[in-house]
Image (cartoon, rainbow, N blue to C red; front, side, top):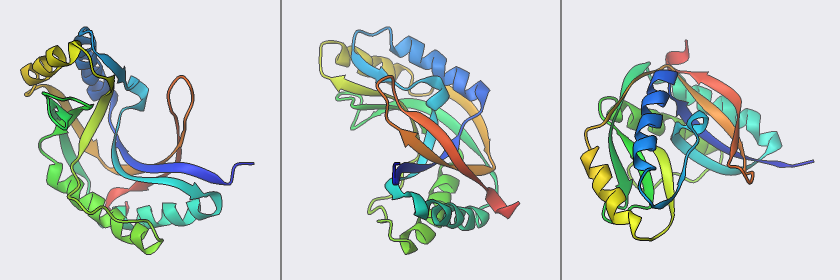
Length: 192
C-alpha cells in the first residue's frame, strides 16, 4: 500500500477554453521540435505543488486549502498569450499566460499558501506567476528557433475566459503514457 500521494492544488479550465488551447497546441506541434505536449484533459493552472504527501495528512491539506479558498471571492480569469520559460529564444516550458485575473490568482495562491505553510509546506520565495503549461521541451534541436518564432506570433492568442469558483486538490500518478490526475477534494471560493 502506498503511504504517500503526489499532490498539487490547481484551478481547472472549462471545455471551451480547453478546446482553444488544443487548437494552439495543434499549430505549435506542426513545428519539428521535440516537445511533450500536455494532454487536453490534463490542462490546469497549478497554484501549489506539494509533492509527496503522507496519506494521513491529505484531510488536513484539504481543510487548509478549503480555509484559504474561502477567503477569496470567485473571479473571472482570461487565458491570453503564448509564451515560454525562460523565454521564446530558449523555450523549455511552453505556456498560455493570464491576462485579467492575474492579481486574483496571486491573491488566491497567497491565501492557500499560508495555511499550508502552517502544516509544514515550504512557501514560495518568488512571486507566484500564473500560467497554463501546454508543453515541455525535451531536448534542443533545429525546430526550437521556429517554435520560438511561432510563440511570438501567438503572443496575443486568446484562449478564453474562465470563471474561477473553486480549486481542486489533485493526486498525480506518474505513468508511462503521461500523468494521471485524480481529484481528491474541491474547495469553493468565498466559502460558498
